[in-house]
Image (cartoon, rainbow, N blue to C red; front, side, top):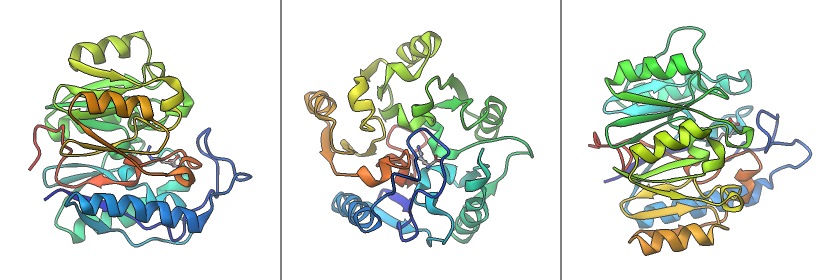
Length: 272
Ligand code: ARG
């Protein structure tokens, strides 16, 4: 049974600005955010996903983005250490949840920044790792050593696509969605070599968080407003589902950011 960690948006809002999507003058509609989050939960449950929940905390509005809690690899949770202090308060809460739920928490040394599954995604047995804007390249190499994985670090070039999961989404080993404009020539070349079936997303749909998809089996869930990607996915025997997540886009997040797969992503060759 697929198993996903989420956090209800009870205390969600735009309380600070740490990426270009966030503006305190453009507040999230909190009751609508609750409805949208519940809509995502319903879809996941209908696909047979087991959902576990973090307890929301006053003053930690971005705790809803559980993709950033850690990178889960087998029984280990490699804990995030956030670039911005506004999110560092999430770290002990996530660590406590992982420990209470049977995972072994690994911490990176002082001074290294790492933002979990937001920046580190397995495609087959390779860990594709975004760096510079949030996670740093040294942290990503240490994560590779801890997991004994080959790491391919890719520099994120555009502040709007500050986490790897906003511009790249593995669907299965050898298959992924990406937004070319978020990478440099080197990054695009590496991705093309590494992922034989690489589906590009246009700028307009990338801006609707098309790449920030949750993959369960062959079902791919995204924010609304990604019709071309959905057509491409359907023609490749995936089942796309859209669900409105506008209130989370205001914080720079969408479907994938709201989830942390605990049993291994679909595309991860180590999946339990
Ligand atoms: N406001 C959050 C931040 O800037 C959004 C995090 C989105 N998470 C993600 N995995 N992309 O940190």
